[in-house]
Length: 581
Image 1 (cartoon, rainbow, N blue to C red):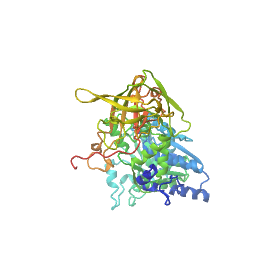
Image 2 (cartoon, rainbow, N blue to C red):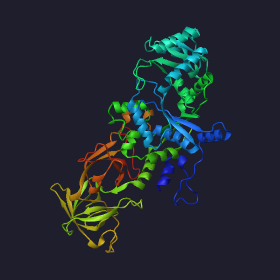
Image 3 (cartoon, helix red, strand yellow):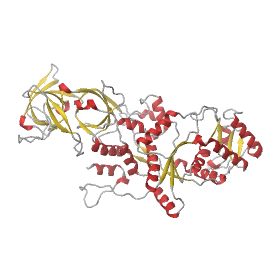
Image 4 (cartoon, rainbow, N blue to C red):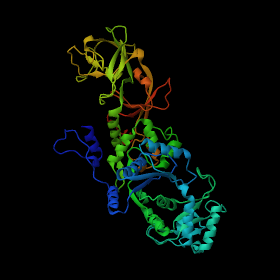
């Protein structure tokens, strides 16, 4: 099965196989427009908009994850395709949970993905304007100060099948509400003592429209405004109005904000400001992980992972550390597309695009995970340097020189003393080719007192050197190897899926009960060819026959550490539940 066929089977929207031949190379087809592109094209055609302006509005209370990458690629991709620009606006209206660290990480992630915003903005930039807008609503009799507790307000809202009811505070005069709101701003009241509510419809079938909160009191230090403000706008007071201030034409958010659209439009209408418009698409969920910031924070706080950048996390910074490329993430987001219905995407599809990209750019290197010593008894006591391609997929990739000597390491599982019928690796009396080197024959097997094989003595055929083979001998097996005198030690971190069930968030009990105990395995000492001594963090490697790897930031000059990005093929299997068989 080709890689393209595998992708098609993993995710049905990617099925684009030609009917006349499944053996032909499958080419990427031009996909049809998604519903947002159809809306934008109609808006441009009708003259409703002359320029498309979007925004990516993260709250700086955590690190971005693969779900945010979808929104980033969507917002920036639309303005790139149709002209216009995208703003990066931080929704920093909750000083308790927001930090400058998150702001900087978000900017770094967006740039790493390959996008640049026109304006870097903050909801806190508009605190003064938003306050004035709230005053305007009060003056129009459309907002009032409420002294009720949060529990009382919730009870007053009624239920989806029963209307709510207003309390006595809704009867306050415009003048009293203006005074009380000014006193709230001046810091006269404590947290939770008063709120500002819109005055809309307590019988609305949309519960959000039943006199929603617009402002609350929070005496907390803000990462940008310090202690200037002690009242902060709620999401619905800040979001649509910030969009309007920036002349956002298409405000794109996820489906959970569908009920908020009515309030979004109500505020714009009553304030008579630029008519931004909200559109919703389905958030992207992915198998074998969680996307909730709250749950991700639990994983970090409870030390189930080493931090937000742990390579098992679905965060962009974690994926970067694991060795994922920005191009593969962009391709994943583009090809999966957007929808109006919640969907679950197999993480194997993302891994497919990662492999496709890494196959084109990764430098090939030889690394032995579990060494078995080989002595080539008839090879001279010297070092021969042999050329080997850096990447056979890249015609401009060049070559490197690999040292070859009479003492080598091969993988222990590449040798079998009593081989099966179709075993084509090294065995007594059998021949194999050493990659980029010579054909060897196994002559003698040495064991210790416990019967464990300690080393294998072989002989080589001098006329069989790769690229210059005059031996006429054909062998079926090719092994990777390293020369012992020049081999360098390396630590390998083999990462796998963080959870052992497809949708841990939907399972009964605590989602952390489903963490995969084998999501990280460490090989303390592997042996690598000396070219890896020059590895840098930007490099991507294919360890031949093993998988794709990158240098980890924990590395030092004397201790190289490599993270497995993804295997050469999808071979992951869910752990067996012993209780259920």
